[in-house]
Length: 93
Ligand SMILES: [Zn+2]
Ligand SMILES: [Zn+2]
Image (cartoon, rainbow, N blue to C red; front, top):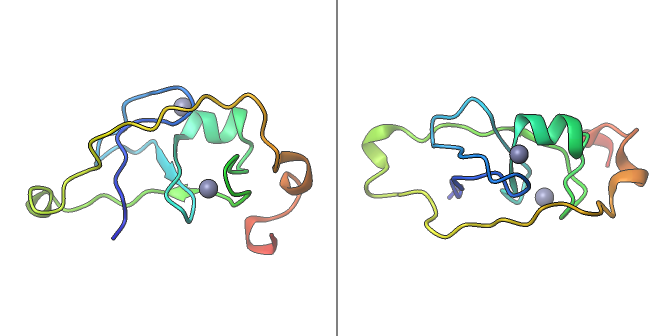
């Protein structure tokens, strides 16, 4: 099951379940759109993968399957995957 994380790992922006701004990698590392574009350049600093917009969980299921409660906040100082991946399409990594 997809983990809905409610904040950007880099800047701590609030990203509610229905946010248009929430982006995830295949491991559910979660960032806001602005950080993905400007800071990460679509390279996840934890795995090197690209990002896609996070789907919204239907309201009726949130009670049974709630968002993650604890916060992951880890501002990016150095992205070890950036140089090798920034010019490669995520589908080619
Ligand atoms: Zn952010
Ligand atoms: Zn990742």
